[in-house]
Amino acid sequence: MNVENTGIVTELMNNTLQKLLPKIPTSKSDITGHLSKNLKQLMLQADVDSSELSQHTNLTISTINRLRSGSSSVNPTVTTLIPIANYFGVSIESLI
Image (cartoon, rainbow, N blue to C red):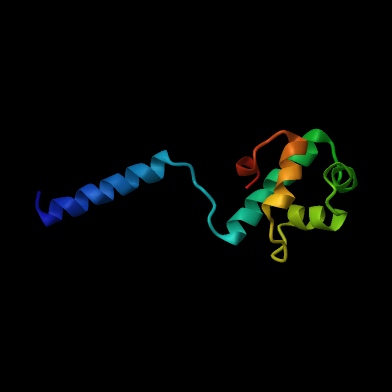
């Protein structure tokens, strides 16, 4: 296989992988954006407000509101995401 064909094969493989693999958020803004959207949806479906979620997760209302808003000041950690995921019965991956 010559160099030109190698480049074409590599490009085809990359294009195929991009189509097959789900889009995984990698930047902080992607993660907070997905988290915000998904948390709002879960709270709406469960008819839960920030106060009630706070009581069940031991997170502050302020933290929950920042997560919901997608605030750039929020830095979601595993210790923040685990109680939310557990409450809604979802994986951390599905939150972000």
